[in-house]
Length: 437
Image 1: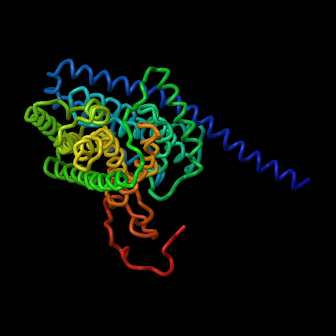
Image 2: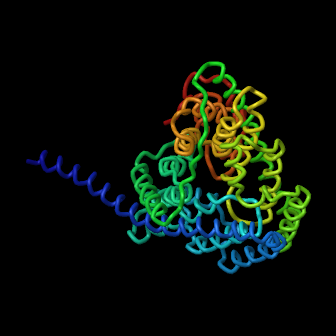
Image 3: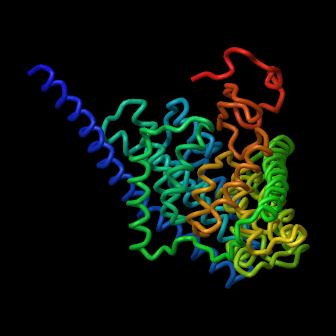
């Protein structure tokens, strides 16, 4: 009888854990779904308003002052995606006031033409919602970290309509090389709930139509070459972002002056370019590159510049959609030089630069499947693998850790942007202890 009791006790423990996480995922997914959909609609409306009234661009310095004021008023200045990652890594607390701060800041940035995305706000708002949802259930430290991941995945799913990619990205972006399997069901359930609510609220999932060539060796080789080029573009993007942020903070320490200076710089850059293609997220440009195979050859460089200035000045948003823009336009321009269709090259470039900038090859493959369909999965997998290998230890998020070397099966546990290939004896052969579990 004792063995039977223990057997059913084990079953109860697993069942109770599953029930707990499904309840939390449902609550987190619902909150993220409603707020995420409202955020998506708000950013979309702000973009339409700016396009209908081009004079709003000249209000960008004022928007910068407003964003700075909001963050100071709510005492959230200096907080961002790296703090969300640290909340999972280290169990650091998150202020609930980060939620309205990033919501208002991102909408203002898009309304007046700052170059930024949406997913930085998604990770921050979603992570904050997940963190505070765990407090309702009085969860312990470890479960709170999983709940934070649930919010990140759910909000990302609500914005892009990619629940599986959102789940994999939220779990894998924290520590590259470590997959929290226990977080899969909570994150995936929350993502599905948020996705369903976003559909109910009229948010259209992000999808692209692209023609994929037949899988043959010559095309595979060309895809690998394009992916290598995209890896170097992702390195350029990450380094320009970090360099610009460091230099602007150093040379213009006053955040009010920095916001006005950055806003004026974006206005001047827009006038010099003679187009508003590089303001906002630029989803129309991404769509044209992938579905029509059209993009200006210099577009990826200008988007890097616009985004770096915008975010370094203190405006809010994210870096992932700009990475989509940069990858799609670069791939569209470079693919014909390699004998690949421009639209197909744009799709490859989008996921390759995203992969190189986030160090998440598996999540990038799932993203490609949900955005473009499964026909070209072998090409996309190859592109993501090559981009991951050649992008080194660079990345968008400095709090992200990479547990295993990209050169060999060796445990290194380093922060992104704080390590380079060959450091700490990484290039030396080891007989024992090359792996650490």
